[in-house]
Length: 375
Ligand SMILES: Nc1ncnc2c1ncn2[C@@H]1O[C@H](COP(=O)(O)OP(=O)(O)O)[C@@H](O)[C@H]1O
Ligand SMILES: [Mg+2]
Image 1 (spheres, protein in one colour):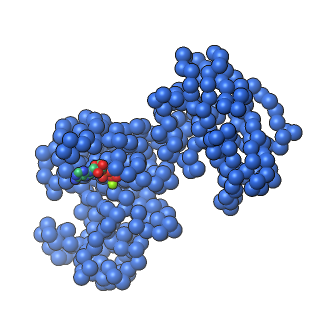
Image 2: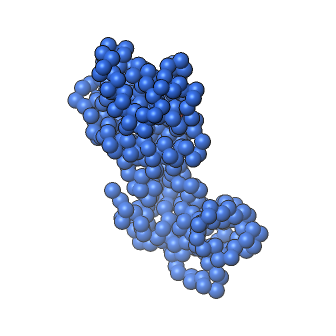
Image 3: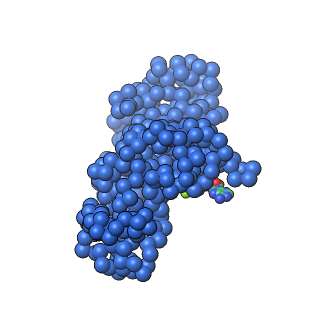
């Protein structure tokens, strides 16, 4: 087991800079998820740590050892990819034990190690089968077995579930989490799927354009994003943004002319900014009956026609508009809304985030919620 540290890592391909100064510390035994859009540098970070790519500058540590100049095979890392490429002509047992054979472990010890690993993964009854006789999930488990049997200090998993169908993905996600809890091997898991990130991670690292945007527990990133990018990346449907102009010390005016007074702490943080965006999560907007509407001074209320309703079973997603901004609401009480009908929507600024229009940074601590769940 080991901690991991990246210090001021830079990497470019030709004159294209891909990793732009990453600093990150991962604790011993932690499961950290890298998330970010395609091309932001997630796989490159794993490949650098594994020694499959060479950094331009910076240092990387596994435990107390500086690993930059250590050969990949001696870094004691196991990688698991989306394309797990098992050897087709070998049995499950041979596939799992192949790495140990290459390292010269004798047959007796190898068989014992394969048996232990197989029972950890529920593969005991499949040891004599060949990969083509297995389901997708079973093959992925064999790939995991191949990695686990080496008892590495670090697991690097690069979108390992992307080839599986939705149900199997959920199942394997839970298995990976349980296995990691049991083995306590420091793990970096890469995904572009925010649900996978939210459910798996001890901490999430949000990457964009070769830089770390924010690091933290899933609930912390969800409730206190540092910028529009993080706010928009986590959460489904995405957080809603509504443009607003500053028309007084603690007053904002929305595109429809409605004025709203800000809670004191939000107003203070705005300082001399004139243009902001209000960010409000879909579950923080209510659909209200118009006669129930209370016009509190820091509540935004408007009416709109419903463009679409999606049912998730226990909850509904109701899509409508605020001016030209599409607004998604996630609710268990849609108050009789149907597609095409007019509804009244409402949210409190206590539950909203404020972002600077110019650079997207988050200006406000979330007045109502952030202080509670913060880690
Ligand atoms: N071997 C390479 N040569 C040139 N460019 C590369 C190479 N590997 C990756 N890149 C570029 O580096 C950027 C980051 O890639 P990658 O780390 O694979 O992104 P991610 O895994 O986040 O989708 C991308 O723009 C990609 O095109
Ligand atoms: Mg990748």
